[in-house]
Length: 272
Image (cartoon, rainbow, N blue to C red; front, side):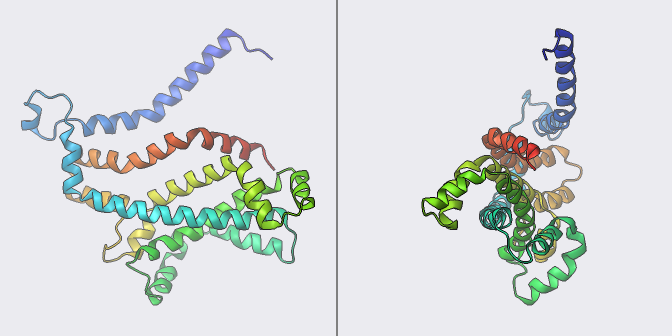
């Protein structure tokens, strides 16, 4: 069915209105970050004060905190995606005793909020000597990401064409070969979507790094921004500049993977 010119125009108007509503706060933060820090800076005749980013980087020690965030995010994404593919394949293509019970146990990781488990989790990790370490911050987030990743990849593998896997079995391929040589290459949009979601959730996580590193030895970027806010609560320019720097890696990763991400979300919406 072909839409009329009036309908297309209405669609564009609605989309532009929603885009402005979503992007408005971002433009405000960037504009604030490029504004003058004080009255003396406002009189130097410069319209864009790029030095605010250098000042925020140095005073907030953002280099060290961003390095910690990158390390934690890489560990969580690599380990969680690997185990999610393995468990998603098992639940999506195999039938075994206790399958439903085990799958619902995985789903508990999605349904139980972090606030409900953070206290006993802290004492468990402290007993294991993992608090104030990068693994103490990464392991809880790996568990949460694997819970969602198992659900995500199970949905994908259950919707794959059975004839493909049966043909591979007839050719002598085992489960390992079918998974990594046949199914994983075709599952690239779903896997990229899982990578991007896991990265964004890990990067923005606040509570787990705050509790699992009480001495501040493993302080991630969002945690550092909260402390930076306490130091410069009146200096909104430096605070906005620090916020832009900390959000930039997520924006870059999304722009780099957005084509696969949208494709994976659309495929996920029409499956099962």
